[in-house]
Image 1 (cartoon, helix red, strand yellow):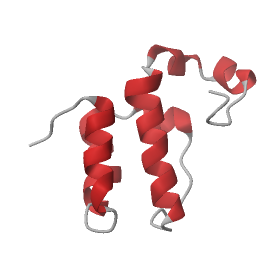
Image 2: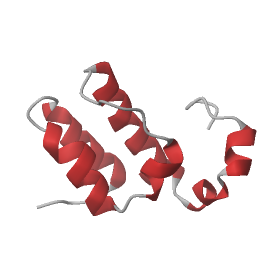
Image 3: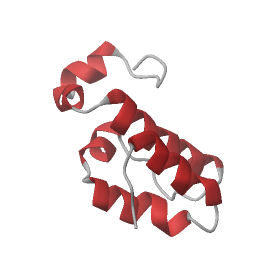
Image 4: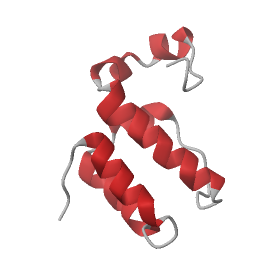
Length: 87
């Protein structure tokens, strides 16, 4: 969590984050958001807690699939990191 810039205090106030897989859910979603921010494709900031809580289907629908044309390798990188196969 230090690598992502979150403090123990943030985790203490959002304990649900401890339930999610850091490698398969939190890190890949954070990377997606960072890529979208770098490319100025997001219009607002999202909290880690709200992003982690989304279902896989909802996250893909809202944050990955709409940007496939703008960031072509993001979809493949995300599905590889999470281990999910999307058809």
